Image 1 (spheres, rainbow, N blue to C red):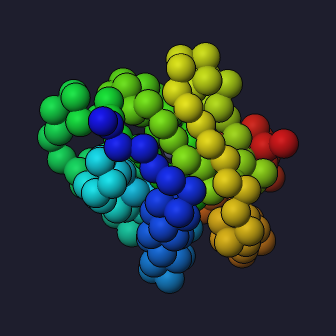
Image 2 (tube, rainbow, N blue to C red; image 1 turned 30 degrees about the vertical axis):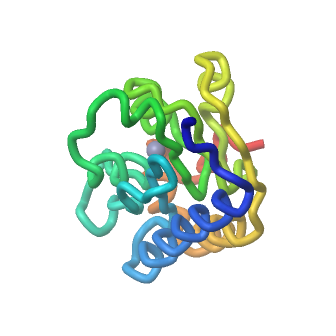
Length: 164
Ligand SMILES: [Zn+2]
């Protein structure tokens, strides 16, 4: 029987992703964290590295997938990706490439760019609408708007593009 996450599992793994997001904020970075889980076991946890590593491509999700290292295709296909914010098109693309079947999203009020694409490709996206995740992004948009705009590749002032 393949492992299926219970709502309690989802809460626990999202809390780990939130912990990662808070660490990133404390480091001066973008407060988005993620966790990759296989068979109930955490393969890797990571967070956005734009500020910390001067990185253009290490978002919460891609940093986590990178940290998990080389994995057999079969492992990705049975994994769940938890992320505090709805994925951008790059992170969604990475998940699609490796056929990660389920993504649990902390919130999509601050930003949403890829959920239609993911659904169209058969990925199960579950949005928790978590107040802690929303609060992290509200503080980001209020206190570090330029860093956020940079992170999603938009001009400052247009940082809510894609949001609803
Ligand atoms: Zn991303």
